Length: 466
Ligand code: ATP
Ligand code: AMO
Image: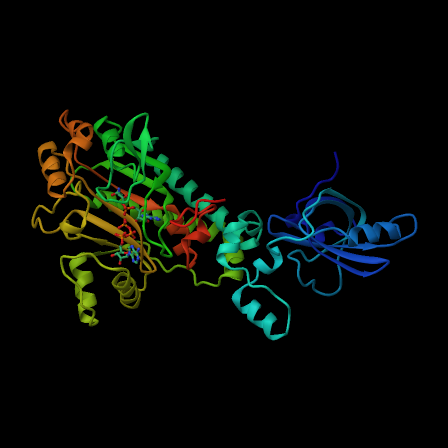
């Protein structure tokens, strides 16, 4: 069927060989009636193709046809690989294709809402180009998201969603290798699962229902059903009123629940080993992708320790106090103090990934187990990357009467969660777990400033399309 090559695989080793590639015409430059250049892009990699009028090989009408192609059209290019003397600017591959044949497989509109090449530039490049007097339209976030299919084509976005895929893959592979079972819990449920108000309500054949705020109740019920260790990767719906850089109305939750023998530290041990394995794998196997992200959005590699740092909430509060930050010792940390603590931890311990545990009970969900030695605190934890939360977790209350009391104390109508509480009446083992926001992990590992960059089609209070 032909000698198809991937653009990313074109190298000097193929010099003088005839190759066939399919990609998009990223830029088309006509130099004369006899010559045109087409930069062809395939999944973030680009190669310069040279079309030269040559008797019996390439006709002048062919050069004219190529010069008239619209950007982003899909083209098949057949030609000979050559190695130019000088470095090629504006293409990732350092070889050219001397075109013999070029077919347009499907053309794009002549005028596009986003120029992919411009959308791929870093802030520094944009500034330089503007100073040099180049006509350039900065592509803002809303335009990117409105025309996401075009925006996705930039090398950084190609890399971000490959990294996201790897985070999910490592999560699944690591947990399977540790004896966890993957489960799928319902997303249509009768009430709120986190006790908060942020639920999307809907009509379920005449019954009031909600989109699941988390798989919390059902993953715990799977433990009551003797699965021992479970995990789920699935959508989580939060009717957030917030328009922040880190909240979405729909995100992908990576959830874990497991029996514990003695201590909630058993759950934190899984977090520790899972995430160190994940970061190691990304750094080792996704160097190219990380570099592609960094080229557009510069960031420093994440600093993390072999054994993840664990601080108690009280220790964290003390560090903040010592730094002159006023915080309520039994309240939650706000975004600003979380960031500040992240900075202090980095200065003192040299890590940007750490666990903060023994949170005040009052700021945790109703199902959280209080500390045995001091019920003002709880067997719970949050995990941070670069001063922002990526995980919440805890040991759960497994005694049904006490669980009902805790729910009531938090203002929850126990009737709405009676099947959940009843499932503990048939004998529930001590257990705990945690929930991770996939988009937040990718955003913070890559030092990105907005969660919308790591959601393929983000849903926020103002966005329901595309
Ligand atoms: P989780 O919901 O699991 O706790 P989260 O990171 O969304 O994860 P929240 O408890 O919602 O955490 O909020 C933690 C902090 O984030 C709040 O104390 C507040 O400072 C900040 N925050 C939350 N929502 C908003 C918002 N809409 N605008 C500004 N800050 C917010
Ligand atoms: P929590 O509500 O903290 O805990 O959510 C777990 C993790 O999900 C992510 N997250 C979000 N990501 C994007 N947009 C949002 N609006 C959003 N809200 C939360 C964060 C957060 O750490 N049932 C518990 C987990 C457990 O204890 O097992 C829960 O849902 O990364």
